[in-house]
Length: 260
Image 1 (spheres, rainbow, N blue to C red):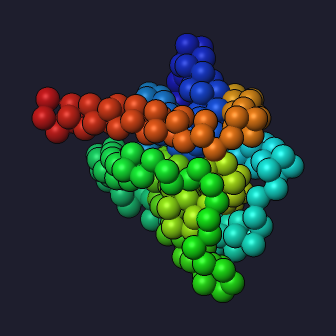
Image 2: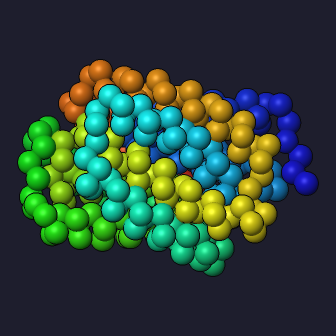
């Protein structure tokens, strides 16, 4: 039984609110929410991962619905990609407990650096939608992306929304706003897939998950409406700022872990 004081709950709720906003705008809210959960005394990495999924799915349910109603995401991409990601996330969650806890931060740091470099190197990418393929090739590519990112979300999770946006923009050719709309639907599916494994195994700390999830839900609603109102340019700027800040934060954590 975890001993959690009121201050810890408050900090987790603030983390959930911020994570929900960030995740709804550009993805990557888990890179705020999961580290906050890992700071809870006595919680295991697998419990933190599973509890993070509860908070995340509450936020992505609201943001995906908001985007669906206001943006009208391309369901020929979102549907197949979400189904593949759902199945892959179940498998990824099944091996999550095999990943050494000390490797979590370095793995996520490397991926974030790659994402930040890619985005900064291509300032014009994501401003308008220019799909690279049509028909079956488009669908199969979306399926492949869903499998890879879904498996990652089940195993680790943080940054999944951002990686989905990057894949949809960089590989398939969507603008940032419609890419984010599709990413929220797929991200909801990956969260559901991971929880399908974690819940029966008793890994979720429900008191924390529901508290963080309620805050995440509010943040996601505000963030999705702001992104829709301000468009792809706004989403790209926030994306670069968030990923850059996370690289600095995770880099410092890795330095302390291995060289301090």
